[in-house]
Length: 305
Ligand SMILES: Cc1cc2nc3c(=O)[nH]c(=O)nc-3n(C[C@H](O)[C@H](O)[C@H](O)COP(=O)(O)OP(=O)(O)OC[C@H]3O[C@@H](n4cnc5c(N)ncnc54)[C@H](O)[C@@H]3O)c2cc1C
Image (cartoon, rainbow, N blue to C red; front, side):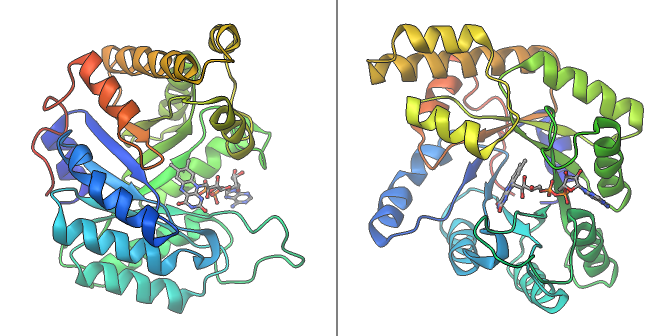
């Protein structure tokens, strides 16, 4: 189902991000837990893609499996860094043939240890958005609208573009090129998100903005988030609460899940278009948030399509 229809159906979306497991045992463990995610009836689930194509086969395998064996509607991520136009075209053709309705179009990052700049036909995500849009416009997708296209947004800024006005221009360029929705980088400060969403509207970015939420569940996870989502601000009240119980892993998880629950409640109360949970393939935190907020069956209630 095209994202425009998903958004119209659900009013507010709830969705989960998965990554393709690396090993056979991690794969088995994840597949065995999929029914727990299914029972939450998300609007869609997204599947990450390793920049440069490092998870190309595994991403494809997970998307195929989710489509064939579950009621979950997969939205594959696709990064364009290092890819040729022909490679992207063949990936899109395979997804169109499988009935995949939506793609999250990203640039990705060149590997940190790369000696030379990444080669390929795409410089920025906007180039990929154009390619996905042209694929649909050529009548190569079963839906006459083509793929629904999502792009990334960064409420607290993207490290490569310190000028926030220029950065907004780059986001608007992706929307003008054909993006249908935005999913944000994780954040912990809702006021920063809503201020940025207002700035999007002022700049003419008028597509739905889905908020990315990732509960802190361990001190190690917190440190990885700070590394991977550079520029993310960790509010003092959150850090203070974690500090109080840093020697007790279960309490750290309780604090992080409580914070994410309050964030989600406030986002819903203030009319967010959707919430995307970065799950790290674990259902527990998301399930607890759903239960506490009475969400199960109330958003994304129609299931996959
Ligand atoms: C929801 C979400 C999902 C993600 N999933 C993945 C994933 O599956 N795999 C993965 O590898 N990474 C993923 N990422 C990370 C993402 O690929 C990186 O953060 C990347 O650095 C930015 O990607 P982008 O699509 O926003 O790129 P772009 O929109 O191309 O922006 C990248 C930078 O270039 C700047 N820029 C854009 N256009 C221009 C221009 N014309 N001229 C000059 N500068 C420009 C932007 O301001 C920004 O600083 C994800 C991020 C998010 C928020």
